Length: 146
Image (cartoon, rainbow, N blue to C red; front, side, top):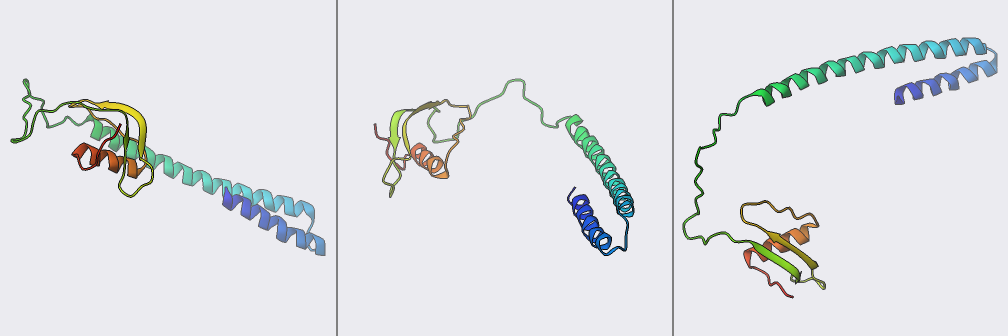
């Protein structure tokens, strides 16, 4: 679209100067502008068709990957192992407390509550400072205050 717009502006600009000097008629400028737009539209359509072909090939490849059977087989009776020296997993609760960050004037987390159950994934969306502070809290590096 940018190429079409720039080319039509340049044709009108240079054609306007020729019309002003009497070297060209308005009808000739209109015809030339129409021809240029038709040529550029054909070029754009051909590039679109090439892109459609590429998209179709990529879709076929993605479909082939998704249709592939997995070589990983789920066991009939899965066994949960706990690494040696680690205690049993338990839920982590954070109830309306404050999570401070050393060197900051204010706590990075105030008045929020959540529970992280063992075996589940809990997503924390926020600033990297908040995420780092919660990780420090989880590891027991920083204090949790009510």
